[in-house]
Image (cartoon, rainbow, N blue to C red; front, side):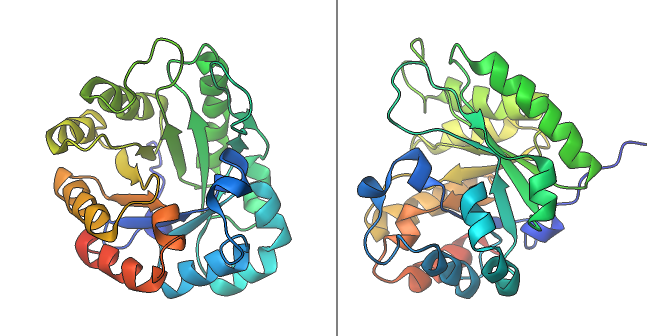
Length: 253
């Protein structure tokens, strides 16, 4: 019988809110950070006090701050690949960490980005296949960041693209898929159905007003997604813990 990987360490009552902090590599510090949130320990403190189900770090931060991460008891989700925003054209996210690294660092799950629609998607899918197999042998859940990108992708948050992203995650064996939300609840409902038994979390995206953001959180919850993987909307907030509490109350975890 095939063993199913448990999500208990990174969910509460089947729901999840993850604090994402891979933006330093993906976007650059000048885009998202200030003197306070540039410090990973500030983020870790929010994750702990805000009762997040996991914090997403790249390998370097996970290594340099591993003592504090372990002490915090916040589940570590180690991102295994990444890219900068400086290279133009069809994107590719290079593998920079391994499942072995994740186990050594005490991670509770691993994350991996695939840009479907990119001319490099084949390479990323092949890498993901190897990671998924190895991670499941270690009982580590795999979260796939699936983003439609590339020259032929006209609208990455259309009904078709959101559903294609979630279905891709199901087909390649992800336990959870992180996608962008286009703002149309019915489209997201279809994407969640297309994911089958693969759980769906939504990217928080760029900073929004609290009112607009919480309205979107409600739509995400009602769509059937299990939660969010959010960063900037929380750690750029003037009251990150207050906002985190409101998010938890809506999501139900």
